[in-house]
Image (tube, rainbow over all chains, first blue to last red; front, side, top):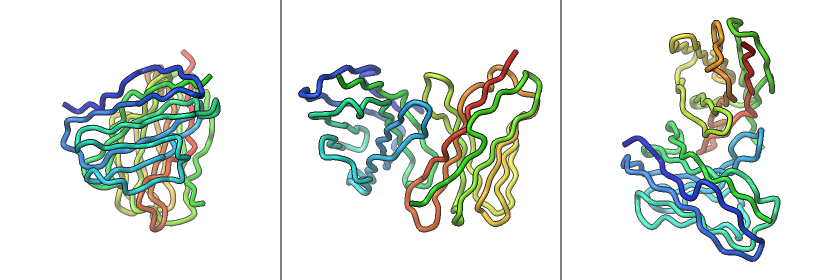
Length: 113
Length: 111
């Protein structure tokens, strides 16, 4: 299994809603990531978990809250988002370190109304 | 902040023509990776280069890492419609622990 699975594929939410994005991998990878990608732009790193501990937070607003319940799962909790947060949210994993090749999930296309 | 620049931003080619995208960093990169993202898809890893001056080939794709480990290129010979997508380089400039993605080159192949 060389897949990173993300759910849901699409999400529409209001600015007062609370929702969660989920990511799962069964490759035994110990580094997991959240990226945000706007149309026609490169992925922007948000968070990195290494061995289930948050190792990098790229100054992301607190309305985004990551969680790593175990080595296979990564969540991104969303609360009180703004319309400018609408984007493709990509989860990725790598074997161990942050310099290794990334395996991306298919992403969650988020629209905030 | 540290950046990885990529040119051109867009490239339209006729099917069968060659294509090259270039990646440049102001600081030495520990390694360079290349990804392809099809329209509506997600980035897919193509290759990683680690050594100074390294050249790797995958069928019609040739990847190079500069001698100073500050630049890289991806060359596609005789493009096909299946090559359509955005090609991103990604590297770790200087002491950075994580990858920084280049701005990407969007390739359109006209049949």
